[in-house]
Amino acid sequence: MSTTIADAQTPVADTGAVPDPNPFLDPLRFERRVPECTAVIFGANGDLTKRKLLPALYSLARDRRLSAGFAVVGNSRTEMSHEAFRDRMKAAVQEFLENGEFDEEVWEGFSQGLYYLPGNVKDPAYYEQLRNLLDEIAENRHTGDNVLFYLSTQPSLYSPIAKQIGSAGLAKSARGGWRRLVVEKPFGHDLSSAHELSADVQTVFHESEIYRIDHYLGKETVQNILAFRFANGIFEPLWNRHYVRQVQITAAESIGVEGRGGYYEESGALRDMIQNHLLQVMATMAMEPPARFEPEAVRNEKAKVLQSIRPMSRDDVRTQAVAGQYGPGRVGGHELPGYRQEEGVDSNSQTETYAATTFYVDNWRWAGVPFYVRSGKRLPKRVSEISIEFAAAPHALFAAQNPARTPNLLILRIQPAGGISIRFDAKKPGEGTQLRGVSMDFHYGSSFGTHEPTAYETLLIDAIVGDGTLYTRQDMVEASWAAVEPILDVWGNSKQRFPNYRSGSWGPEETEEMLRRGENTWRKP
Ligand code: BG6
Image (tube, rainbow, N blue to C red; front, side, top):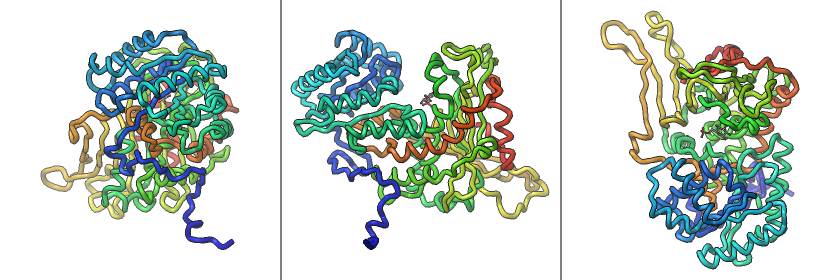
């Protein structure tokens, strides 16, 4: 069979996703109508529901961004009445609301749509009760039988729940509604478990109905990377290996593991932050312009970046990756314990709380440019940013008076206080030509003067509307597991000399060495 033009244009990663005929999907993600629906939250007694999901849903209701009949069904094993669940969620929203004020009257209306159905999610009988409750809600609140299932339980329950939803016939609506599945991170523990999990949920839901959440993609400043790059003509010509010397992506946290020792012991910084959040940020920064601003076109381009990451050999891992674990230290006048002294952590733990890696994206745009990516807990401050260093001017005209020059940096600040800065040299006023580094700044807060929606507000609305642009697809998740797996293998099979950095410092000494090999140094944000 000869190759046609249409064949040649088939995306590299054919995930079987079909173009979405969804009438709610506005390609510009703007002024969208939000359909009626019920969200079923599995794991509704957990931390994520209290801290993020319910506060986000309440904010959306308050800002009139949800439909009037919107409903939530909470599930966990704990016995509780609808009323007790509403009380618990009210306290959670009052404590964790990030945007605006809590309003009693809005809560009264919103909480009428909150239901609770306790039960064992492995028991088929549970899904019969769920069906009855969903039917009742569809009838009373006119939800059109649309249902968003949200998996926020321990990850080992993701497959069993998806399969039970399928066996109970709940993955399809008998009345023309839609059914979708949102899956919280971690999506797998390594490449093969992520592949297996996708295969399991795909026996029940089509890939286009599966929404793998990565909350970094919902952050305003991460979304703004695309606007910055593709709405302006001045940056894109420089956005390649001819002009960019190096890229640094940092997610530093000042907190420790905060009572999540049990989870973190199984995870570590590479799995917790780099495999998902930071590789997604890197893909957004490095992708080619998509043909259209619509989910599959955007995700095809991100997938290509992740698939172009150069695989590391065992020897590469020794020079391109650094693991760290925090010891005790003094931060802001407080003595803090080391990771091994935290609750739920083994006193000889080999889990890394800091990870730094050097990735290369082997394609025409980025060949040879190092992408340094790091994340750690108990660092001096909470800051996430991308810093892009441009090549120096080809001839240093002012070198005699100014031997040390400021590199030209473009800094995309994700948090806190999102914004964009450009660093360059300027002449100091007065005689002679003395240079000094200065910066030109854009701050989200002062330029727009409006509150930013939280990442969960954005992502929940997207899932309800049926827009997967900011969700990860199977091929993206698998490519990012493939990129970190050699590092996980080497680290998992060698004994590290931990702890190797003090709480409140910028990580282990070896991390500076990694950059020195490329004649670079880490930026101190
Ligand atoms: C989560 C990680 O996904 O992201 C946490 O599990 C981490 O360990 C958190 O603290 C960071 O998110 P944010 O939005 O505070 O940068």
